[in-house]
Image 1: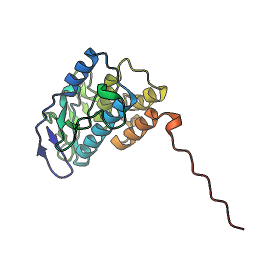
Image 2 (image 1 turned 180 degrees about the vertical axis):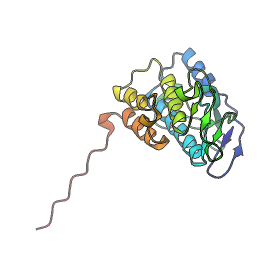
Image 3 (image 1 turned 90 degrees about the vertical axis):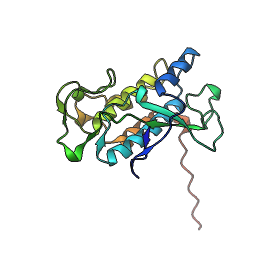
Image 4 (image 1 turned 135 degrees about the vertical axis):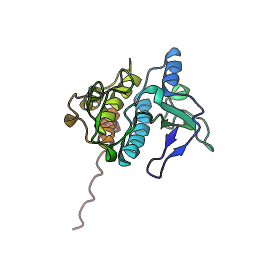
Length: 206
């Protein structure tokens, strides 16, 4: 897997398979994604894509088979850090990394015009034929991937709305970047009663 674009390319051994395989294994055991699972995936991939985009690149092939799991030395296995038990999608001693830059496009070296490419089902409209591609193409794929993870889960309508924004056919109507996408998704996945209450003001001294 290739990671850490902000400091150059680095190679890692992804020793725990793909996200596609992990989800298939969990679903065979009756697993359904929780809000915590989706936050884990959203945070990891938004951070990875932010680094890719900051380097002036577009991944163009974000899909479950191109997201890998790797163990983190020195950490003990657990349920992911915020509860949910052993059936959590990700354990606390592993993380997601983005892989396969075979279709990656350097916007500094091109106009963004591209031919069809990407994985079926996770390919944005502008990659289904000749079209102009920028970082917002990856956001379309990111929303599709997170909804794929969330299949059969009972989630708030706000989640559908948040992910749906970047599923617009017109890239101009999508989130401007991965950070904005993540902010919307995290708000949607945070229960109303988990929002910190405002601190009471201290009374003024007379």
